[in-house]
Length: 193
Image 1 (cartoon, helix red, strand yellow):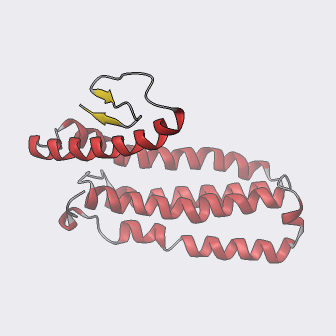
Image 2 (spheres, rainbow, N blue to C red):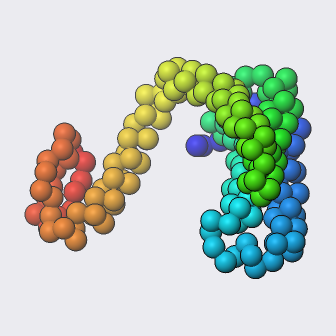
Image 3 (cartoon, rainbow, N blue to C red):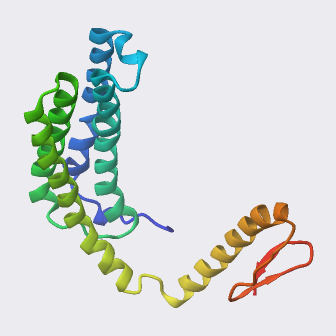
């Protein structure tokens, strides 16, 4: 990742709506802790504890991840996000409404909320995949690595692999299997040939 392509970055409103949704979910987690007190912390199987875990996992981290992926892929990886301006608001609404229904369903034992979340959350993840995967496949298939960058990439890969091989193979007493293109030195340090 040599340079950021800021000209390919989406409109700021696309990732911002997700990133600005994370703090209210964190505040909801605080409210749940205030309301339910130590009942949430007694056992992990309490309905309130499950709701709290999902507030953090999906409400806070999920929003940050959705926003970051929608910002990062075009700017850093050069991946075109399809339908960003058109699909961004419905994606945000479906994801956050699904999380809200899931949290309410878990906390209150509300079956309708769980069923609604079971429809909206997979829909939101499928929409995100439909927005990003075609661009990822296109970027991977277009030969995004030119020959010179492929050589640099291969050198960096060999360097990382050699270091990883040293860390993992040395304690085991040396290289036991030969892989295509790898040679083992007697001391147990592997290097790419």
